[in-house]
Every structure is written in C-alpha cells, then in structure tokens.
Image (cartoon, rainbow, N blue to C red; front, side, top):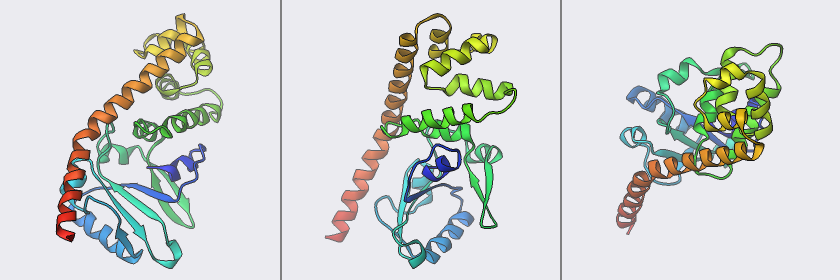
Length: 227
C-alpha cells in the first residue's frame, strides 16, 4: 500500500520500507507473527502489535534482522483514513507476480486515496500516479477511467484538457477544480487544487490528533516501565 505499490504503477519511489494493509483478526495476526519471526523482525516503536490499536488506526512498526532482508522496515496498518474497508479494497486489488509468487497491491484509485495525507511527499506522488495512469491509457478510455481522472488529476493543464474533451462527464462532477477547468483560467484551476489539498491535509491532521495523543501516552507508559 506504499512506495512499492507506487513503483509498480509507474510513479517510481525509492523505498526501503514495506507498508502493508492487513486484516487484524486473531488468525491472521497469528500468521503475521509467524512471518515476522521468520524475518527476525523486531518492534521499533510504539504502539505494540495489538489488534485493538490497529483497529483504531494505529500502525505497528518492525525492523528486520534476517540476513536476506536486514534493515528492512515493515509498517502494518489495518485502517486507513477515508479509504474503504479491507473487504472492499480486496475486491479491487491489483495482483502481480514476482518470482512466481502473487503479490496483491492496493488498486490505483485506492492507493491515490490512501496517499491523501498531511505529508509533503505524498502530494507529488499522487500527481505522478494519476498522470502515469492517464498517459499510459490506450485506445478509448472507459467511463470509469474518465471519472477517475476528473476526480484525481492534479495538473491544471491536463485537467482542463480532460474537462473540455469530456464536457458531459465534467459537468456532472462536483469537484471545484473541474468546474474551474470548464469555465475559469488555469490559475483558477490551480487555486482550486491547492484548496483541495489543504482541506485533505486538515482532515488528516484532525484524524491523527487523538491517535497521536494515544501514542504519547503509550510512550510515557513504556518509559515508566523501562525505568
């Protein structure tokens, strides 16, 4: 669900981390513990690897010591802000094959949604992901592809071109940037995109505020135990 998936979709991002979205039920967590043991992976930060904490949106962080993956960081999450449930994401997944093994990735639309965070590095990645999807489409795009681009393109010039090329679909959009692309200037489109990004950053900060308070409480509790 992270940088490795971005590499597959053509928006290359060098990453030493492996970010996984998981099902946090008891049986699956037991399998994950076995896998982490095989990788000689050890927790490197709070919170602990706990189903209840994962279900609230926290991540569990590990560093591998097995010689074949020494130094690899693994981050596990079960819930993502603004993204569908795991079952729905699983239905829309993309599966690739690597060395004869199937690897399941977040679908492109869900990956873009998951990248809408307060982190500066995620927004250029969203732009590259959607542009790559747009430029590599062949033949006549499907209605679903057009709707996806109208929802997610972050390049003013491309969004304006798309909106005018598919004006009926654009007219049905409730995105301010699309409305600006139809009747405004490129500066208007850019301003709408900027406002859109700022709102997503605000929502992400709001989402993480209580979780950060919980993390701080866990750090303090662990510090007292260690002392």
